[in-house]
Amino acid sequence: MSENIPIFLSSGNDFCPFVATAIASICDTTSSFVDFYVIGTGITDENKSKIENLRKKFQNFSVEFIEIDEDEVYKDLEYYNSVTYINSPPVATYNRFLIPQLKPELKKVLYLDSDIVVLGDIKQLFDIDLEGYALGAVPTVWPNLLIKKELSISDEHKYFGAGVMLIDNQKWGQMNITKLAFETEKKYRDKLLMADQDVANIMFDNNYKILPHRFNYDMHTAFNFNNDDVVIRHFSGVKPWKLMEGTKTNLMPNIEDYWRYARMTDFYEIIKSMSPSAAENAHQLRQLQVLKMECTRGISRSVKFKKETHV
Ligand SMILES: [Mn+2]
Image (cartoon, rainbow, N blue to C red; front, side, top):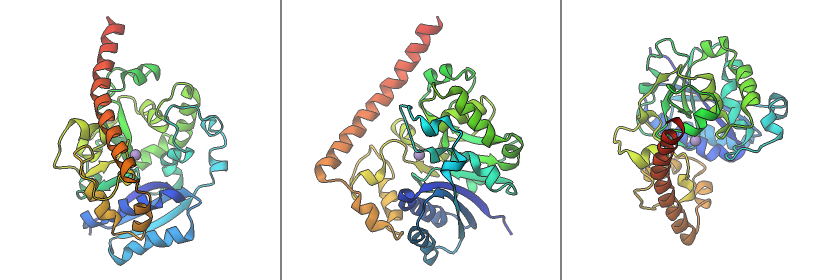
């Protein structure tokens, strides 16, 4: 008998449609049994039922909702009171660092962002040997040289995305990761650009298992590399639900896969109702084109900056 795969997702009530879509895609592409833990604040019973209704289609999962009292848990997080980051996600983005406190008994777990669609068996990722590391993650294509310098991260470190993490939960517990994350946030809060992701990169400076980018195939990766072996398509940047269903564009690979799984959920009508007008859709596509150009230029600009400042 193979072991269950524990997967943590984080969600507020408004993110439930995307959590359901992610769960549908995971269950559809694996024959393993998956235990989902949805960490969130204020998820309504109605939305919980809609997520649980996926059991009509998939029998290979369980789901537990873990309510977080944000006012209590995050009261000492400076970020909670003074959000000044360029990129300011809700405080719940720190929920991923609560995992070892919430479920200390679990050994190896996955944390996944909810803006994803899974296209290959998640067991491929879960079964990777961490070889003694406490974390497995995927380096970003965007080199983030400026961020590394600001955060006193070593030159050797490859900046990784925090949206997909393979976690040795016992090691995270020993590291007291929850406390360490809050302390790190406090120490660097004036310099953080990417919130929890910067915090994770400081904590695991040059000390994590590097995973192939098919496990966190994000917007920047998609702009730069074709990959027909993608396991986790991560819609960082522009979200698929911000484009109309049926939009044909090579700027957002797998958008049709996203809608295919959205249709399997009880949230389909809600996700569809978020669709923009035709004019707004065209505007979003132009924005994507601009982002793609900025990504390419941004990379060369960062490299140039490094040469200029280190010579
Ligand atoms: Mn994300």
